[in-house]
Length: 289
Image 1: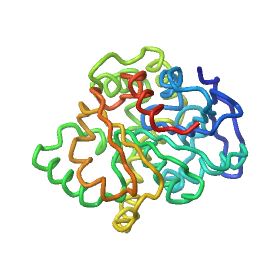
Image 2: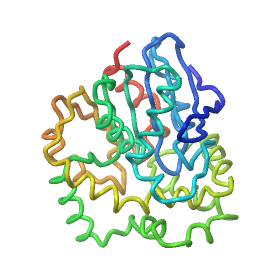
Image 3: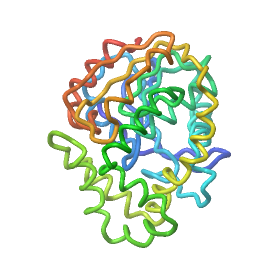
């Protein structure tokens, strides 16, 4: 199955884009991208997913073809989750299965926190589990010991006005660095071109940076979630060559879920584009149709 070209949906919270694919009458599968990507990141995986699924892949606020909104508060991950929930309500989606990668995995968790009765199953890919406070502490210790050479971009993104000043005109260099250096294998050129296209839309460098600038506010919320247990069956698919989401992120995650399975893929951070067939195989073994 292939995903559609972006469609536009105007709701109370704003103007958002999304892609669809699969069986229009199938079980809804909501797939949420991370940074610096868009809903296009699921294009190659979608081609290997089993029949009977209705794919809905939103563009998160500030990325893809969704609106660029000024103001840091809009990029707190609980707010991004509310954007997606309002889109799903407008599309008439009740219960659904949920997939999220990178920041999209955080947004997926925020959705599952907000409306757990509607999330049938959840798949997370190469991102922190937000209620895994013990694992996060071990990650911080490991990063400090290593000197954190791979985390420089997060400090850059958080700097006031710097991404807005330095990225425009250098979008291709900026994106190719992450998309290729964080992967073990080839990165699809069609995806790279799509991300370059939307990153040239005015306002995107600042919007992308706000995902990181909002992190301090997000972390304060997550610090209150130590006792939370995810009730829905869950799957964590891990690209084990990721230089940023290191193995320590997996420590203790079994304590955070009622039912969790972990599958490893020989891949870097963008595993859904580096190994789409293998990632889809793990999804197919877990998702309901």
